[in-house]
Structures are given as C-alpha cells and as structure tokens.
Image (spheres, helix red, strand yellow):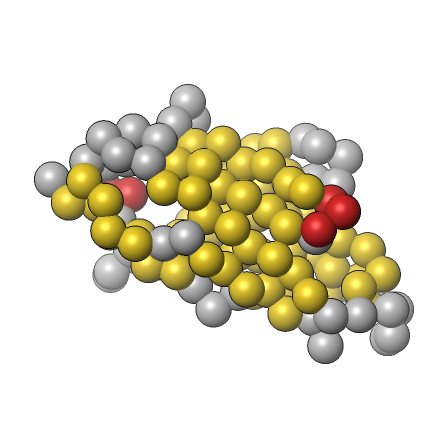
Length: 121
C-alpha cells in the first residue's frame, strides 16, 4: 500500500512563506507526476503545481512567480515552497502522485490527507 504524508502547513501572515513537504512511502516501483492541489472553503479542488518524473513543471497562473515545486526522487518526496503568500492562498493543500506499486504493477493515483494553510491579512 502506498501512502502520501504531508507536512508544513500552518498559519502565516500575508507576505510570508511556508514550505510544504510530501513523502511517498510503501512498496513503490515508480512515481510519475507528483503535485499539489488545494481546496478553499466552498470552492472546487484546483491544481497548484505539478512536476513530472522528467522534471517538467506546471503551475496555476495564480501562483506563478510565487510558488516553486521541487522533487527529491531518491526520497520520493515533493516540496512546495510558497512565498509572498496572500489571504486567497488559504486552503487545504493536498499532495497527489501517480504511482506504480511493486505489486500489483498498475498505475494508481494517490492522495495525501491534506494540510491546512491559513494566510492572515
């Protein structure tokens, strides 16, 4: 069984920074894309940033220039550095990964439990 465990959320003032981490654990054969989504109260979950195993990144327009996604493939970990945070960034942030376990050898989409980021004005 593959699990994603997130950490790093919390309360920060507008203009501040936070770094989220997400570590994948379990019997993993390979990981394709890893990314971060967020869901604010009353809104749909949206993609924040993602990175493929080949290093191609994708960002939501609302976070370009402020957030940076990175991966440590040796540790099966993805990070989200969030700078210049705004109150509208307040949401539960979820880690997501496309994973192939050792057994069964088939593609799975796995989600973390979510971590709350609150940005005060």
